[in-house]
Image (cartoon, rainbow, N blue to C red; front, side, top):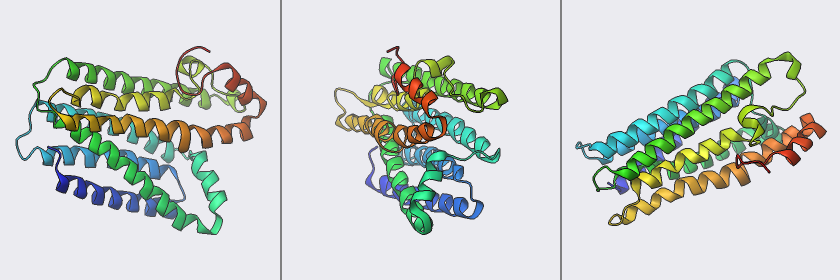
Length: 260
């Protein structure tokens, strides 16, 4: 199931997806399309790679991984696409535009291809999980529960934030209700949690490739918590909300949804 040619084709496909996403961003001026293409592209390439690697003989675990990937990509990609169509822009990309200046287009092209490389790690994790030759069992049930809970949790946190922002009275306030009272970034937490489903599905006593599934949640945690997620977004929030966001930082954990 861990097919070298499949991984190479996945890498090329993700590069093409992100190149197309780059073109749409620079021609439309809306940075949200970058993450839309990343979400849909990761899901589409992941589904086709897992299916192709099955060699025309998909079994139960192949179907399981394909469905979970499709649900994740459709939910996240559609959410970001709707936000982009409504005119919303990601403050992280806005800051990059200011920082890069005249080099914005070339730097964005490189940046989006780095995101494509990150997506390849996620695809490899899903591919490794689908290749577990053991019969379906408790690990698969646990993986499904984790994935569905994560997709639901992220959808709820996104809906809470959307409703909060829609109220004109909240124009200069910080969303600190619902799941946002437990974590400053509950959507990021649930996004990371989703990728823990694949180790539950893929790791088995007689399947060494299953350990590759740990790459997906490890990389997602590193990106969200230390690189392109929380740090730039919180820097923007401190600039735009000032002391209100500082007080929120002191009250609520950044990532883990547990009371301080």
